Image 1 (tube, protein in one colour):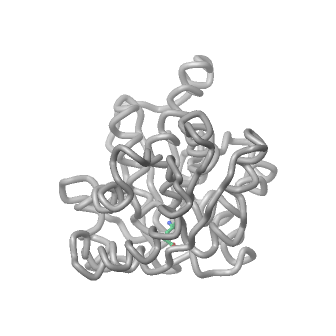
Image 2 (cartoon, rainbow, N blue to C red; image 1 turned 135 degrees about the vertical axis):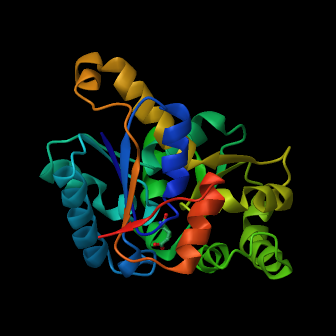
Image 3 (tube, helix red, strand yellow; image 1 turned 30 degrees about the vertical axis):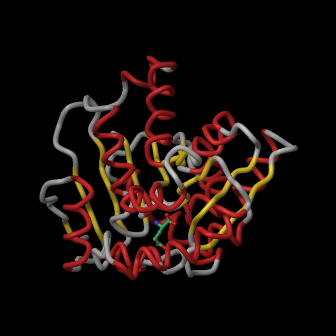
Length: 260
Ligand code: DGL
């Protein structure tokens, strides 16, 4: 079974990509809604929560973990890999690889929460793969609440996006990493603002699912040990109306959230 965790329901963009790309595998999702958002928390708190979330998933049968939260992945990936024997995947490295191979002029933009941008992880990983590439990062703390309010097409959302994205546009980026679980829901607006032909958007949820798919194809013995086929489960540490609505928006159907 694949274990996926996030600070809330935004990570369901990753679960959705897993469902689409790996339909034969069962997954269990854990959204830490009681302690969301992670993006404004200290690294120490995010690491502690990430360890607890991983333990929960493993106790419930997960054989492989996906950190479906950029904020958690930015500070906790290495720690989880050292602490647990199960393979740990995350949303950052696959998006970085795709961005590095996609850029034409070498100007890459990254948007994310304050925690993700503060960690400098995208900058570090991109420069490791392409030392000459230029990375322009922008924290966008207002976007998660806007998505959770369902303001996906509101005038205010467009205005705030313009404020965040204009500096990146001025840097003439040709590739933009959506470094937060919630941003795929704003893809159309972001694409419109940046110019579809000028800037390629990298959706970390899809890239993470593709990486796991490749790992499972390359490791048939491990792949065999994974339980397949039964119903996916969605656990959360709290339930709110906004979370139920966001989950439904991501999957395009009602999702049964179970509070634990
Ligand atoms: N899941 C978080 C991320 O991808 C966004 C929400 C939060 O701040 O907890 O960074």
